Amino acid sequence: MKIGIDCRLWSETGVGRYIRNLVLNLQKIDKKNSYVLFILDKNKKEAAKIIQSSNFKTVETNIRWHSLKEQLKFPQVLNKESLDLVHFPYFSVPIFYNYPFVITIHDLIVDHFSTGYASTLPTPSYRLKRLAYKFVLAKAAKKAKKIIAVSKATKDEIADHLKVNPQKIEVTYEGVDSLIQNSRIKNQKYKSKFKNYFLYVGNGYPHKNLDRLLEAFKVLNNYTQLVMIVRQDYFCERLKKKVGEMKLSDKIIFMHNVGDEDLASLYSNAKALILPSLMEGFGLPALEAMANSCLVLASDIPSLHEVCGDAAIYFDPYDIRDMAKKMNDVYLNNIYHLSRKKEEGSEWARFFSWKKMAKETLEIYNSAVNNS
Image (cartoon, rainbow, N blue to C red; front, top):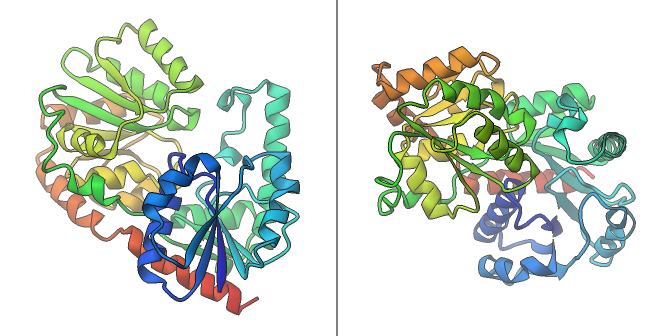
């Protein structure tokens, strides 16, 4: 087969990590098929460090996602390559592309958190953008030969909200990058820099529920710190402003663009990772934390139960008191089985791997083409 992969989000967080690991591991397991990677010019040098196989080539595609050019011009770029199958690892699919493709849907968070509060755009513009998102996603889900979901919770959401036959949806779990997993032993950079800190890793979007996290942390601010690794954007600046208003600036540390080795060190030296999300598609930071023997405090939501199993301590994400109590218990070591939870998490994380994800994705490619 000649398979195209849309790699335009190569350098983005989240989806970008998914794409990079998919390409890296497909090279290891598939010498039979050929691959065409559609990538932005700015990412070609970084991609070249990963792309080593002769059956992989890149095509410069300077077309932004969520754009009119994506809908009108990208199909022409794809058609020039005479592909048997295209994998769109994100919901932004050109609706005029009429050849076989599979799509990865990471979550349906926008379907649940639909107010303009979740956007920097003016309300009318946001509503128009959201309508376009729903239209494109519905079309893509209907036309796709297969849909890849990153969790069973997301699969159920897709089947319910997009009215898709569950048999069309396959689940492939994400994994932990080797650099994040293997660096914790040799990198003790943050062992003494921060003391008795809780850790948050993610973005600042409203569904991450960080306002409640700040309120819960305020109860603990006399004796601990909160390190927040957040993308520097409008939502981060809003959080920083709130932290200042709450007079917590000396206790809450914001970090940006943290490399994998430093991330591993931060995980392994934290009291716990805390994920207060109201909804997640997968919850990769939880998996990364467990791989680094870091305790996980997680929202009591289906996707995080799926990722963490019995290895996490759960709280009601809508209950600030419950969140604060669990953080306090962890800080004071009042939960007798904390060390056992860490061990369980470390063992549990071994069942997830990017190589396994790539192998299952390749099987989906074969199924999609054979059933066309």
